Image 1 (cartoon, helix red, strand yellow):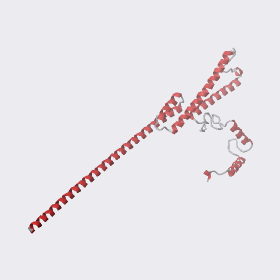
Image 2 (image 1 turned 135 degrees about the horizontal axis):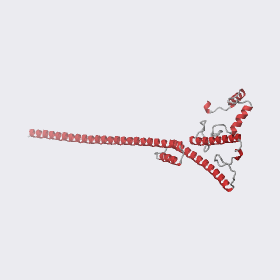
Image 3 (image 1 turned 30 degrees about the vertical axis):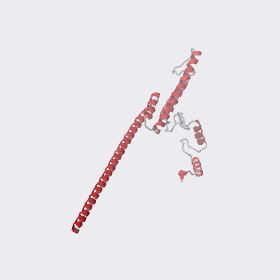
Image 4 (image 1 turned 90 degrees about the vertical axis):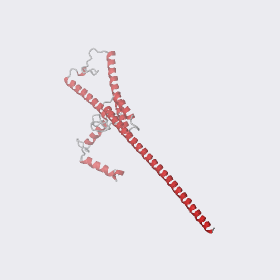
Amino acid sequence: MKKLSVALLVCSTLLLSACSNEKKSTTTASTSDKQETVNSSSKEKAKKEASEKKKAEEAEKKKQEEISKKVTEADTAMKAAEANLTDETIAAAKNAINAIPGGNTDLQKRLETAAANLEAIKQQTTQVQQQQAATQEQQTTNPDPNFIDEDGNGFDDRSVFNDPTARAEYARGEAEAQRQWEQSQQNIQNGYDPNGQPLLPGQDHAAGANPDGSPDAWVQDQIDWAIENGYSNPDGTPTEKGQQAIDEVNANATPTDDQY
């Protein structure tokens, strides 16, 4: 009887041990499955994020390429407008610039300058047309049977008709006036005078200069004064007296930040 009890106790212990081991194995397998599921989910998430990042980079690259293409097209249209100022070329350039996503500051400034130059040309053309119309109206209202207009400019040139010297001088004056007008139009189109100086806003000449780049009346007076008073040579270089004056001004000048 005692041996039977011992045997039963051993069997119970072995059975409990087997159940415990099976439970542990089941628990370990379940934990492993869960960990594998978590790892798989993390990999899928990382893969998805990488894919989305790549798509975003490709979309941004495509966007920048499109902007670059639009800028090139607008620059071409702007150059065409600057070379030939008309309402049509300005409108084409404006449409091309407006098509650039986010706009373009440099091209917009060029467009504004070109539009201002075109407006200046229109105003000058209108003034000439009004002057010619007024002259023609005066001729119609007060016809003169002796009116002479060989060059077709709408003005009576009888005062120089019988004087070859005066006629030649008159012709030179007309030619110079035409040359100045053409230079004025060219300056407006280019935005600079013949010396490369930028024009004043809405004008056909740079500061202190005529359309042909020569000094204007005020500046010329200053040049003449400097020559007459021994400060400058006729070629514009300073005399010894003029250089001394320049050195004195520079010596007394207040230093700027750039001079430190």
